[in-house]
Image (cartoon, rainbow, N blue to C red; front, side, top):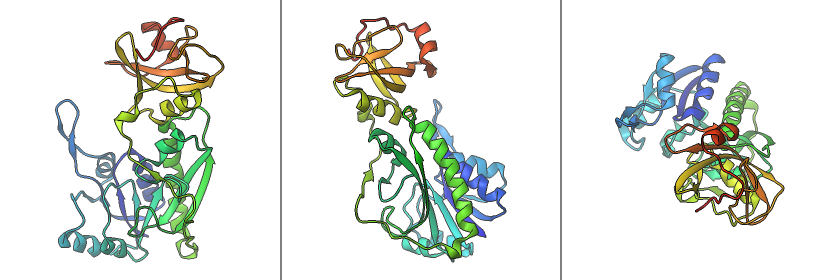
Length: 303
C-alpha cells in the first residue's frame, strides 16, 4: 500500500521499519519538528526523523496541520492509508479523510481504557494486570474511534514503563502490518462506553516517593515512572532516583532500610529497590549502586 507514516519518538521507529520491510511504499514521513535539546540546546531531530533520513525517506515536520497549504500537500500524496503512532499533533478532519482508507492509529492500551497521552505509564501505576495494542480507525475524538484489531498480554510484576514500551512497540509494528494485509476484511468494533479512562500526561510532581503509602503503590510508582521522569527520594540530603522495585516481605519504620540490600519499609509492607541512580551518575543495578553508595540497615530514606 501507499502509506503516509506519522510518528515522532523512539516508540514509533520499529513501526516505520516494519512497514518498509513489509514492502509498503512510504509516500512521506511526518514527525514533530527538531527542538532544542542537550547541554548546547541545539535543535535535535526526533527519533523518527533521524531514522527516516537514514532510510532515504521524504521527511516533513510541519508545526501544524491546520493550514490549507499543509492540508493540500498532505492530500496530494495520494496515500491509501496513513499510519499514526505517537505523532504528537491533533489531526484535523480534512487530514483524517484524505487517505483512501483513512488514518489508522496504533494505541498502546486496551481501549477504551487509557485513552490519551501516557497509557503505558498509567497501566503500571494503576496496577493493571494486562495491556496491549489496539489498531484504531481515527476520528475527531481523543482515541474514540472503532478498533480494527487488538491483542493483549500480562504485565510482569517487576515490569517498568521502559520494558513495556519496547514490548508494545514491537507488538504494534507486527500488528499494523497484519492489519494492512487484510484491511478490507477487518470489521470495525465500536468502543464500549463503559470502562473509559484517560491517561493524563505525567507530571514531574508525581515522582516524589511518599513512603507512607503501601508497598504495592510505591512499587508501581517506581516502575511506572522508570526510566522517565524517574521516581525519587532523599538520602542523606541527596536526591536518588529509584528505577526498579519489587514488593517483598518486611515491616519497619516508614522509609527505613531493613537490611543492607535496599529493602525499604513502607506504610504497609516493604519494597526492594532493584535499580537506582545518583545525581551525575548513570542508572545502576542495586548491587552496583550500593558499592558506591552504601545504604546500611537503619538508614532513613525520604529525609
